Length: 88
Image (cartoon, rainbow, N blue to C red; front, side):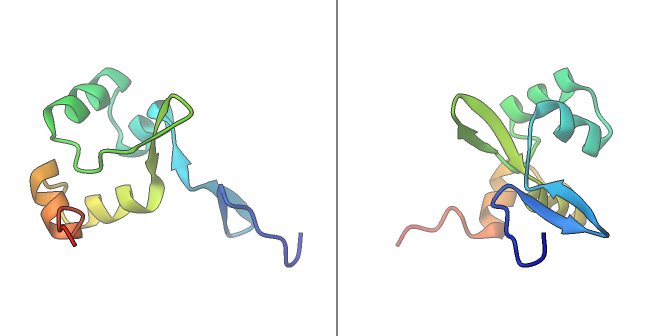
């Protein structure tokens, strides 16, 4: 696999880590239940909104890590902090 790239995974200590996590993996990574994840997503408590890809909601692993690193702010604050709310 030397020199090979994969758009959906990142290598860490020889293990391929997915860049996008489904609801189950996101909930597990955050240490919460799936219904709690979706309730947090609906209320805006979950900062990262995730992306819709082929009918599935997926969350970028690195964005979730950054969100946790800064204290898990509410979505409004997270968007402000990440600069996503700025219009060109």
